[in-house]
Image (tube, rainbow, N blue to C red; front, side):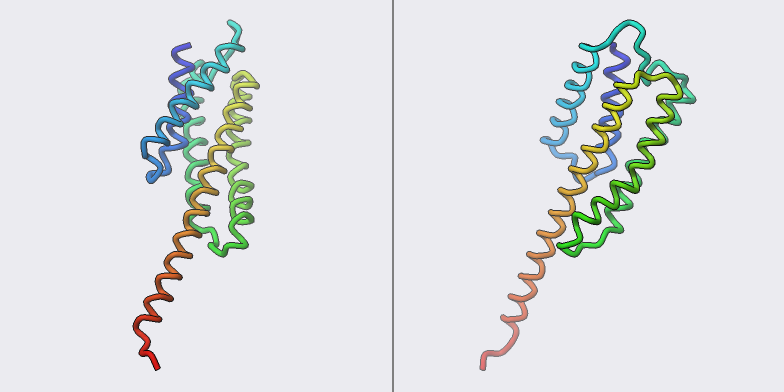
Length: 165
């Protein structure tokens, strides 16, 4: 079980690690809480024949980590390329998630092909997608707010520099 907890914690930290500006205390506590929740959920439903990602070969684990990194890169790249028009933020986020879901499906297929417990695989990929969606929408909304403030400040600066008539 220690292997399972370690692998789950490593996976969850890997998902969050690609987002360098979310390294504040609340996020790290969230990762720890999520890892504890996942470990608790899986250990309560575990039987002795459960195969976890820690039980697969090192080569298969390396490929699993590559899929996870590819998913994180897809999310980050999509966010950087996304349009920032307020009415298109949700659509852009949906497009990014759909594009990156292909990688999660590849990860799911890979783990299932290596006989990892199906419920564990589904839970892991669903949690990765959910966390990615939350991070994506948070960043998009923060970017919109920052742009609105910048536009307001630019307008104020323009009014201050125009001579009064």
